[in-house]
Amino acid sequence: MNTRETVKTVLVTGGAGYIGSHTCVELLQQGYEVVVVDNLVNAQQESLNRVAKIAGKAPVFLRVDLLDEVALDAVFSQYSIDAVIHFAALKAVGESVAKPLAYYHNNMTGTLNLFRVMAQHQVFQLVYSSSATVYGDSNPIPYREDMPLASTSPYGRSKVMAEQIMMDLSAADERWNIASLRYFNPVGAHPSGLIGEDPTGIPNNLMPYISQVAVGRREHLSIYGNDYMTADGTGVRDYIHVVDLANGHLQALQLLARKHQRFSAYNLGAGKGFSVLDVVKAFEKACGQSIPYKFEPRRAGDIGEFYADASKAATELDWRAARSLDSMCADTWNWQSKNPSGYGQV
Ligand code: UFG
Image (cartoon, rainbow, N blue to C red):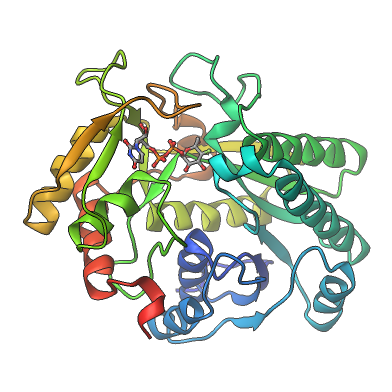
């Protein structure tokens, strides 16, 4: 089925990464032409070979860093780009606290270069990869799109700043048509087991850490805090299957194609929280073995509980999270067990 209307070719920045690669699969399967730019700092080109295998069609791949505005300009000259999905960014919260300059330089300068080149080439349709981290630590749950934005890390502030820049752009020039997608906690993998999350070094996030324990790469899981004001004392998050998330980007592209809205933000979450222990139990069921864990003190900067009010995405994007926690764990395990070293094993 080909659902595209006016948008034919989509530029995907960071398309070799975790969420980018899953989005490329869905775009190709829906008949879009896909051009990926990625500097491969935190991604493997092999992911795009796998994307081609799943979709039966390859995206164009160009190894371009968004900090290289000349190279980026050449991409827009060579290809007739109709819309952009902008994923490319550094994303490790803890690392961003240690290296704020690197994070601001990469995430802000790369984003500014992209927007400048888009405007020069008259490309104004944009889907932006934002995060629930823009809600900071003072808003009541569930988070709604109209709440004030703030964040607690340089990474998070780079997302808040990018959203502010997009609001300013769309206020100054009505040709911009932007959807900012605020992801909650993306997990899972494509059900084929061919693509999935492949973090460099020790995983920061819960699901990849659990799956590396299950596959024997790590001894045990550290659970950061069992004294939160939650049902079992462990942190509660709104986990969202990466294929559902990828589909949210297609729904956003279709919205931009049919409706000019300047700037709008959408929560992409399930609207439901699960604790760390809920995830551990669901993963044990999926992999058929127990996951050894130890309780540790709370991790600096963590919030006890947050989840989305996902009603705006349901109403305006016609998008809902469809996949359960069990399928998030089963698909993660399918990917991890078939690729114990991620893409490194090819
Ligand atoms: N956790 C553990 N052990 C681990 C890793 C995580 O107990 O080894 C716990 C955390 O304390 C938290 C939950 O598991 O309660 C989820 O933690 P993640 O690191 O998987 O996810 P976060 O909610 O901390 O971070 C995610 C994204 C960030 C984003 C943030 C806010 O990874 O990019 O949500 O939206 F900024």
